[in-house]
Length: 117
Image 1 (cartoon, helix red, strand yellow):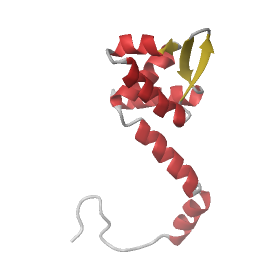
Image 2 (image 1 turned 180 degrees about the vertical axis):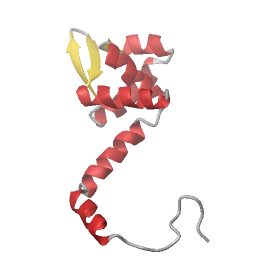
Image 3 (image 1 turned 45 degrees about the horizontal axis):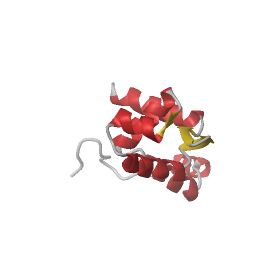
Image 4 (image 1 turned 90 degrees about the horizontal axis):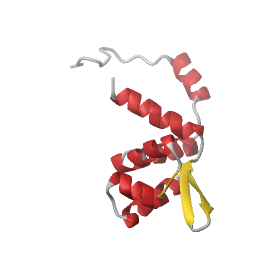
């Protein structure tokens, strides 16, 4: 009845289950994490994040880099901003985007490293 990767008998290691249950994070943290990964599930957004991990850029720069309209890039940046993955600063009439913090760099670097294995 069991297949490869499936236990052949039903046995619950109660001590192990309790230990993991005690150490697991709350549901709110998992929902936020899943939301972050959902946002990262789009290659355009990953490209934007990767570009911003190299250099701070404005919408016009990102549009030229990705061959997309300003409107399309702005939409993606809005989604990234809403999940605290990017931040912006205004300098005169230009708005520059950058990664929100070093954790975003780690996420992107680790994702790329994993994809290239």
